[in-house]
Length: 234
Image 1 (cartoon, helix red, strand yellow):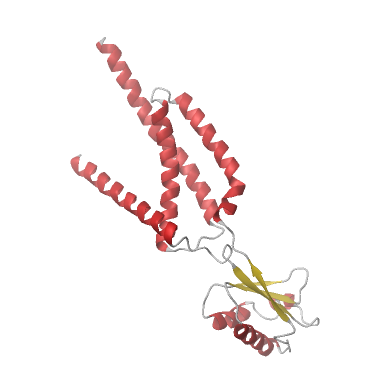
Image 2 (image 1 turned 90 degrees about the vertical axis):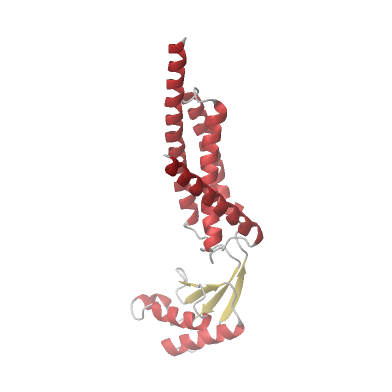
C-alpha cells in the first residue's frame, strides 16, 4: 500500500510539473498554431482559360504540384487548393511567400503542364490574418458553460451527502485539470494546434465529466457508510 501511495505521489508531482511547464511555455512562447490558424499568405495563380485544374485529377496527379511546392518551400507546411467554381485557378497557402518562391513555383508549373503562365501578370498574394484562440473556442463556449452548470446541479443533488464544496471541487478540478494537461502537452511538444484540437477538447470534457462522476460515486458510498456507522454507534 505504501509503495502504491508513493507511486501516486510521484505521478501527481510529475503531472503538476508538466502543467507548470506547459503554462510557462504558453505564456512566454505561445502555442504552435497550425497553418490553418496562423497568419498566412495565399498565392493565387490564374492559369490560362484553356487550362482547367480539374484535369489534374484525371491526367496528372496532384502530388506532382505538391512536389514542386515542397521543393520551393523546403518542406515547410503548405496547403494546395484548386478552385471549385473557377477551375483554372490554383491556390497555394504558406506562412510567408517571397517573390523568388512565386517565380520558382510558376516556372515548375509551366514546365510540368507545358503552359506559359506569367509569374508577374497571372499571380497575386492575399494576406490572411491569424485566428485567435478565443475565436476558436467562442462557438462552443455557451454550450460548454450550460453543460458544466447542468453537471454541477445534477451532481449536487445526487451526491449531496458528499457536500457541495467537495462535489464542485472534484468536477471543476477534473475538468480544468484535464484541459490544462492537454494544453501543457501541446505547448511542450510543440505539436501544431489545428482543426482537430477542438474535437479532442470536447472528448476530454466528456471523459473528465464521466471520471468525476465515478469519483463522486465512491465518495458518496464512503459518506453513506460513515453515516451508517455513526448511527450504529448511537
